[in-house]
Amino acid sequence: MKAPIALIVFDWAGTTTDYGSQAPVQVFARTFAARGLHFDRADINAPMGMEKRAHIRAMLSTEKGTRLWESAQGCSWTEADIDALYEAFEATLRQVVADFSHPIPGVPETVAALRAAGLKIGSTTGYSSEIMERVAPVAAREGYAPDCIVTPDQTGGLGRPTPFMVYECMRRLNVWPAERVVKVGDTLSDIREGKNAGARSIGILTASNLLGLSASEAAALSATEMAALKEKTRAAYLAAGADLVIDRFGDLPAAIAELNAR
Image (cartoon, rainbow, N blue to C red; front, side, top):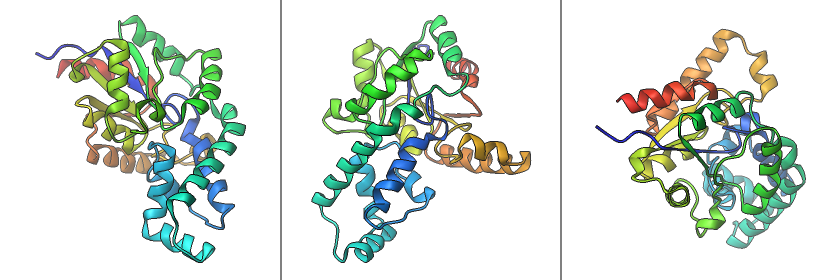
């Protein structure tokens, strides 16, 4: 029988804070629009969860991204362009991210219950350390503070879907082997990060970037529309390798019990 789960590693935006992961979506849209490129939400969401410079590169590397850039700029993009876009993204994000850093409803209470059950709480993110200095204090004041925060710049720029941020959480919190770890997130990159680390992965539907809705947009959908969208999102998580998909954050204690029982 496997050892019980001892560590849960959470994502931030779209999982524990920022319902629907609105901050990065809006800032990416503004950053590209300033260069004359207009991506829709699905384009922006596709690489979500990656380190942000890698996210920009992934968007421009698509056929659509290459076409939009060449149409707007009259030439092919270069790594210098990636760097410039990244700096513009970070500058805008620094100005607004605190406003999007409130915990998603149910997160503080559920994390308290998980801690009471003896679990350690780690976290990884696609944000930089500098951005997290603005995010973490807001969340902490409102009841959510993980035991550690690992960012891509702390692992040599090796963000998702590589396993190294999860490994760093394991090192800092002294939990091993990886089968005692669960990665919880709201993007396909989160799921792959966990699986690449040898951990188990859980995808969340409500408030997720993958579902792709703000709180107001979610409230406007009929029950039938929401059910269909959630089923599509569930299938995407499972195809990426998720061990479980749960409806909302508050379902985690039961999900951990289920994984321990397997």
